Length: 213
Image (cartoon, rainbow, N blue to C red; front, side, top):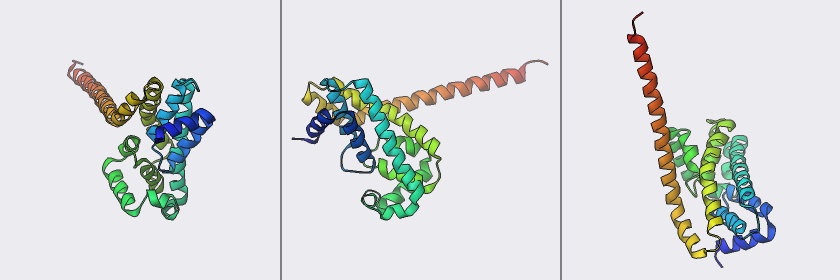
């Protein structure tokens, strides 16, 4: 029995609380893929064991609470956290240095993109708390915006593919690529919006300076 099937069975028997707790465990770096957990939550909604919209709300809360917990743990315990299990297995000294370099190069954008990097989320979120470079409010905003893209994709994918296991597995494998495409389109769209806004402001300023007194 594969992991997805085991999670579906477990969630169907135990409901929303089981999904929420599983996501908290994912947040601390347990070897359970968050994406598969979200899909399993969507599947049990598609099979009639839960309401899909409530499931979306529960999974969003579970993801954000788990991520916030890792950020606050890093913020409160500092480098001592690097020596505590299971974090010391997830955030090795080598990985911590790599994440720090990414923060120096990309800043807050690293927090946003971390949600789309399986295996790196916990390391990035703990590092963000450790460095004290980002306020908790900014962290929650950036992570929440990223989660609003990724979480519904996985949950509703599970919901619509609940009756077709093979189709679902195919799209789970394609899903991460699809998320990057969605993210790319979103970034391009936002960039274009701000470029047009800046251009219009520049034109208004130019017209105002050239107008006769």
